[in-house]
Image (tube, rainbow, N blue to C red; front, top):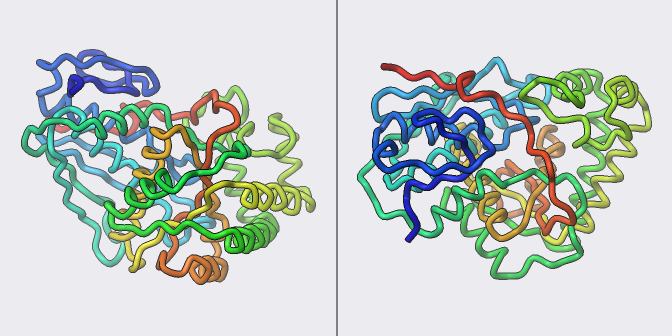
Amino acid sequence: MRDPHEIAGVQLATSVWMLPHQPVHVASDVARDPKTVLTNAAAAAVLAPSTYNTQPWKLRIAGDVLELHADRARHLPVIDGDLRQLVQSCGCALFNARVAVRAMGYRDEVTMMVTSAVDRDLLATLHLGAPMITSNLDHELVHAIASRRTNRRAFQARPVGMDAAARLIDAAAREGARMVRLEPDEKYALGRIVDEADQLQYGDPGFRAELAHWLRPTGSLRRDGIPFGEKEYGSAMPFSVMRSLRSPSLASTFGAIEESRIDSAPFVAVIGTYRDDPIDWLAAGQALEAVLLHATSLGMSAAFLNQALEIPAMRARVAELAGSAGFPHMVLRIGYPSAAVEHPAPRRALDDVLDVIA
């Protein structure tokens, strides 16, 4: 067994993670303090993926409890009208925090606070449980938190084998969701649906305005949003991108790119749940992050294809296509990256999202 207090993906200054992308060795006499353990867990949480990199969460430590709150100020009213993607994003953050707690040698005890309607910002609480022997899998996953990257590029022409696929499907199931791998004909049908969704979204001025707000110019000091270079608009220059967003040909160009990459992806999957309420959204987010971390540990990466799920009529078509996945919450293409994603998406400083109650 490896030292259960060795955590990857943070920079620790005795008690607080300040910058999230550097490895650190945590001394055992420090890591057993609940405040420090939960601060480490919070720093792992903020490395989670989120819709359009909005990072729509707030965290609070009170004693031996880490609270996860939704940050409605970061809600996308056009793209995510029902808050489903916001809650899913918070679910990803929750899973990272749980992994970090286990990697530091404690059981993760979670209480879901959401009900049948999103009427409260407090989504879940994470308590430090009894000490435990950390598993090799916990170590794998906590190291994967720091190295996970969204990969919007094409993948290698290398198949994802049955054993690897089964591991990802099982990871989702353990978090209360169902992951369905699409057959080739289903994959091609999905590509056409995504292409249609791109046409509709980019034809909507409200969508374009909301997207533009969350695109981050090259060299920007913003710590959220999607870097221009990660979206294929032909240029990373702000003026060129904004001009492209008004171009009537953008939808066709972007839709064709997405459809092509779906067709060529070795593994395309839908994550869903049997119900469609906030508790299930939170579970879907945890399942998603579990899949992403397992994929990272296997040398794979993933890209999101959620535009079809952001349009109710299109979401129904994806549900029909995926069948046993239930209500679809996430569409992914997964494979072995053809090149490393050199720069991680920006993250806000921990002090901006974490409050500690004395």
